[in-house]
Length: 98
Ligand code: FES
Image 1 (cartoon, rainbow, N blue to C red):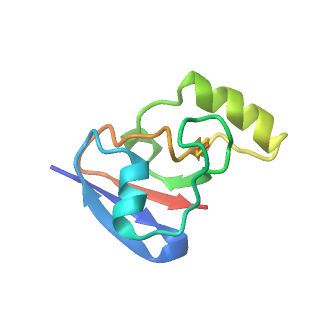
Image 2 (cartoon, rainbow, N blue to C red; image 1 turned 90 degrees about the horizontal axis):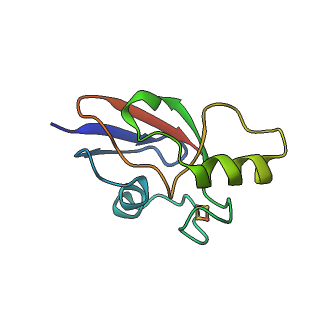
């Protein structure tokens, strides 16, 4: 019961169980997706969810605040902070672009 996470830029895919953080996935996969604070404050880890938002944890308050500040109108509804997301449901595909 896993969900497949694909990091498009790096041509990487990894199957993970619900509860795993995207930060864990990125670090385990060898992706070059950059992180800064790892605490939802700096905005370094902004990504776009190309597919599979419904398999991720909902945006939290830190994400709403930082995305509003960092993106200055350039973020979309599909923008997320990689350090704040978890896989929420099994049997899906999440495609991430950074
Ligand atoms: S690493 Fe700073 S907001 Fe995600």
